[in-house]
Image (tube, rainbow, N blue to C red; front, side, top):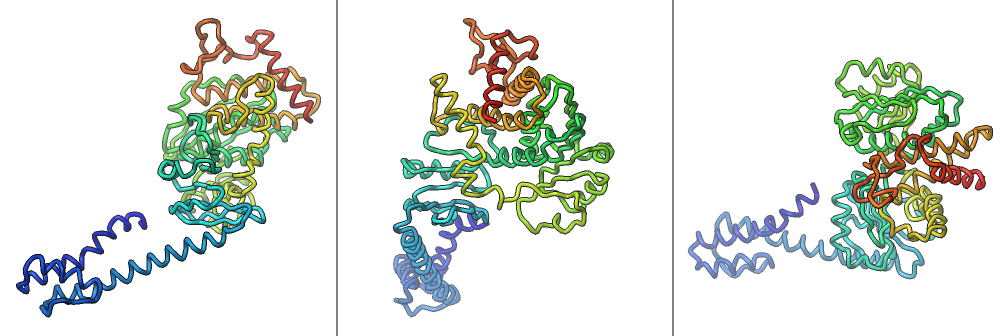
Length: 452
C-alpha cells in the first residue's frame, strides 16, 4: 500500500497548482499569469488579488504541500546523518532491507540499520530480505554496481535454489530450505526404532514442497523402512514436477486435494502431521482433533499467534523468525557450515571450485544434502554395516538428482553425466552399479564415520 501511494504523490502535489491555475483563469487572468500566480501560492506569496473557491482551496493546500516536502527532506537528511553517525567507527555494520518487520539477532558488536527499501551504501554488509524473491532480486539489480566488493546476502523463498545460476559475490540464504531441514532434524525419524511411518504434509505453498523434498533426502535410515508420505495440497505442482520419481525403496508418496473428504481419515491414522502454511484456526483445530493425540507441527513464523492458545500439547510450532533470522545462520552460515567444509575438501581432492559463492545453486544444494545426510548416518547404530549405509547414501544421491529434474540416461563419449540434458548413467538401483561406483559410496560412508 505504501509503495502504491508513493506513485500518486506527484499527482497529489500538482492538485493545488491545477486548482489555483483554473481559479485564476476563471477570475479572468491571462494563462501565463494564472500559472505564475498559482505557483507562487506554494510559497505563501500570492501575487494576485483575484478570489474564488478554487483559489481559496489552493491558497491553503499549496503551502501544506511545500511544508510536507520540506519536512520529508529534513527527515531524510536527519536519518542519513543519524545512520552515518551510528555506523561511524563500527568494525562491523549491516543494513537489512525488507518490507517486513524483520529484526536479525546480530552478534554483539554489530551495528544494524533497517532502512526499508532505501539503499544505504555506508554499511559494510547488506542483507536483502523482502517478502518476495522478485522484490529482493529487483533491489539487488537496481544497486548492483554499488554492491560491488561488499558482502551481500539475499534470502530466497520461491525460487528453487537448485535452479539458480551462480551469482558472484552474493550469498544466497534459502529460507524455505532452511526451515524444512531444521524441521526434519527436530522430528528425527531416524532416532526412533520405528521403521514404518505415516507422514502427512499439508500445504499448498513452496515451503510444503521444500518439506517434502528435504524429507525424502533425510529420512533414510534402514533398508527395511517404509515411510508413507501423504501430501495434501490445493495445487499439484510437486506432483507435476516429479510425476514418476523412483524412490528406490518401500517408501511411497500419495497425493490428495484439500477438498477431498478422505483426507480426515488419512490425518486420523498419521504418525506425524506437518501443516506447512498459515491456515484458518478452525481448520488447524480440526486437524489437531482428528490427529488423535499424534504430534502436529504447524508453520508459525511469529510468536503469539492463535495456535499458541490452542490447549493441545501435541501442537508444536516451527519456522519461527526468531530462530531462523539470526546472524549466526545468515552471515556466519551455521546451517550450511558442514556443507561449505565438505565442498572445500572435495575441491582439494578433485581440483574443483573452492569458493562456495562461486558455485551454482545446484552444486551448493548437492553439498548441503550430502552434509545433512552425513549427520543422519552418524546417528545410526554402529552395528549397521557400511554396505547398508552406502546403499542408503546412494538412494539419497539418486533422490537428490531426481528432485532436481535429472533422469537416468547414458551420455555420449562414455561420460557419466550430461549436465545440459540432466542425465546420469548411475541413477539406477544400488545393486546395478559397477564396483567402482559402489566404492565411491563406501568412501563417503567411511569419511563420515571417520569424522565421528
